[in-house]
Amino acid sequence: MSLNRDRGITRSSRHKRSASGAQRAHYRKKRKFELGRQPANTKLGAKRIHSVRTRGGNVKYRALRLESGNFAWASEHVTRKTRIIGVVYNASNNELVRTNTLVKSAIIQVDATPFRQWYETHYAQPVSKKGAKAAPAEGAEEKKLSNHAQRSLDVKKKDAKIDPLLDGQFAAGRLYASISSRPGQSGRADGYILEGKELEFYLRKLRTGKQKHAQ
Image 1: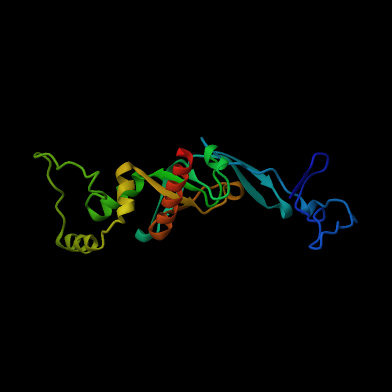
Image 2: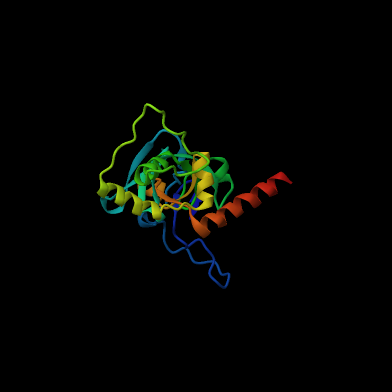
């Protein structure tokens, strides 16, 4: 993509040199179908989305500011809308971390509350031992379940296992997630909670980044 002050942004590669280093001949002007637009640079804040009319009468939704999104917890097969807290890592540019810019594949922190509430309702037990609630008061009565519901709950509890890395994040109230949508194109910041090897990888990246800045 090239930017010319007088003639706008173009995605044409005619201005590029060929593989052998030769300059290509300029045999035509820019074309409407080669146009490019300014980047959205979606920031954290109260939701603000602009619509952009595109080729063929289609519409893109340019998110200028977003504060929440739908995030999937893959191992539990559940998705919840939650608040985005901040950007913590971006493989392409540290400046996007400093300015809290939301782009596809950015690593962010989201509020763990909706997922904790779902887990405690689904399994009838605290998600994290560190953040376990105090025992109910003497006057409060426990909800009586039918035999069928109790058996169903007992089966669920057998599979109620949390990754130790996620356990610590739930205790802190923040989960690491990755954005899988394109906020500047779809107007949404949706993604998934990081788990397993992928979570380990990004935690290593975050640790090494902090060590570099500390030196």
